[in-house]
Length: 456
Image 1 (tube, helix red, strand yellow):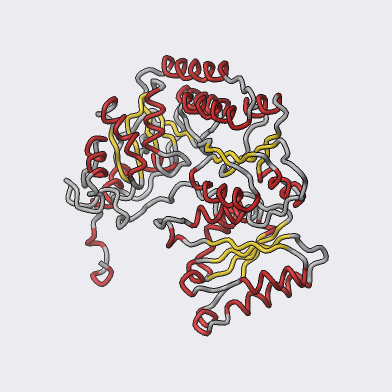
Image 2 (tube, rainbow, N blue to C red):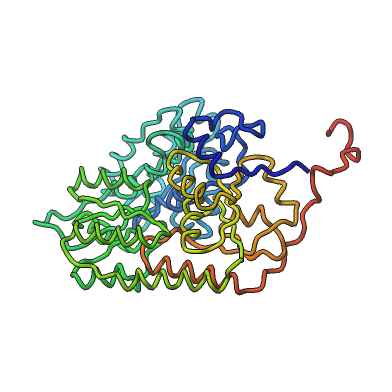
């Protein structure tokens, strides 16, 4: 078996600063390079899957347009979330693409479908793929036809993974699309309400965010809680947008330019001090007091209690989880938890502050890249930790004594962070789950002589 490749934080920090990420590293291959294979999916920061995200607009249906293979993961996502009744497929064949008749076929199918409906939706969204990106397909005519003929709104969801490394990614475009068909009522002034932009789940109404803003007479709104188009349009009357993830910044800028709604960065984090700073900035933006000191103290007390109760127990953080793995490793370490391993898919300039902190305070921490083939060695060894957080860490560390924690996205308020810390404590107190049935033996030790020569 090949040795698994471990990188110390100092080495990664230097490679980022010196621009050597795409060059062979000390182990003879590129570290975190985009050319590496990827064994697991990326994080869910695209806001819950592209077809799923497009259906966040209430009273809408969606048509997925593309070759069959493009939408299979979207089909699974929608079935898992119970939204398949609002999602339909229009298959494009090779002949459609070569002959350039795709847009006409799509328009015929959608119009025939709407004509046959007893009760039509109020919004139709079209999820298109890289095929249409490469062909520069223009669906503007379809949007105008739907508006004129059926008096419904039209949104275009671009699932273009070829833009993943671009300055304006398709995940950012998805969030813009979700708010692109807003038509707020033309009222004088602004409603005392704030919108939460970018999270893939709603915030608990028991959170201090609802408590403190409610006491100040300010409502909290989220697109996932809109059940009607009227409630959706009310998002455009808010006095402030809270941007919870960087991917939502383009959407916030679009809403500011189009509807005059200012925005404030209130990014998700597991750092209690940063959450408190976010509230201070929110107080200034809204001109009201938001007393959260007791919530801040309660989070730190919870963190200290978990760290004391489970002193010496080790944690691994995985990248296929809606957290920034290096940042989460830093935040948990600052709260006294023993993070031993981190599995990431990439590293960049945005990770430098976290790598510098880890280099200074936790230089012994082991950092790995799931995109490197050598990391598969972990799947066939007994090495483990007491707890894995996230799918990727759980995939690579299969020791029977390891507990596994799968949670939602990163919190942005104190109640969410306290809940996450309590989940860590509860997981560490539980008995490890029974190991899954063993797969094939170590492939590096496979006896290839049993295969026919032509298949080797």
